[in-house]
Image 1 (cartoon, rainbow, N blue to C red):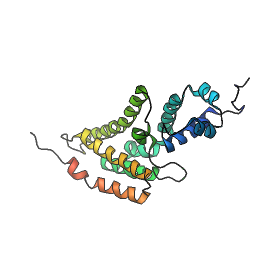
Image 2: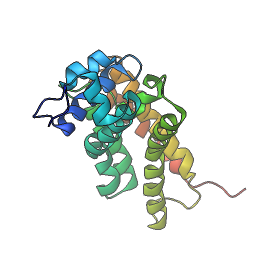
Image 3: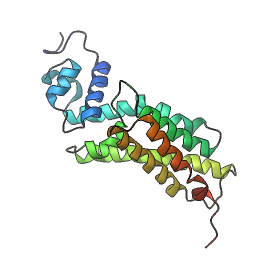
Image 4: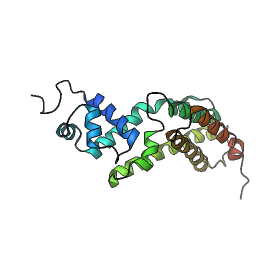
Length: 205
């Protein structure tokens, strides 16, 4: 027998997708149970039965976002032939993805830094690790470029990676504030203008 209050045709993944959009648009604290249950098409007991709690639902929604919404942004880091093209592709893809019609603006994971007020310590740790994952991915791409002789061994990989992730995270905030794709692309190109200075060989101390 179906649980009371849960539609017979309950689709957990579809409900999670709708919850993700509510949290993405409104943030954790501002997303009320009414907002969530109405979007998901279930009542509160069914939400708790399926997901455990509002916070557990939020964690799962963020994980779902990372699994389904990040490929376009991260693909250049995996596929571009040079490190410069990889970073530029990452930023340009971010500009495009952050301003897609039909989706909330910005990146849900980035915005969780300010929109996840009220979550517990464990959820906060998970979110920080997810945001830090972008730095790690760029560092790994830069290390590959060093290994292949494209970039100097003296490259400060963590500093360069952190710079470009900081730019990308700022683009997410700008998108949430209404910046159009063209403005974000201009920001991306401005950041790439710093590439030569950031990656030139460093003199030995």
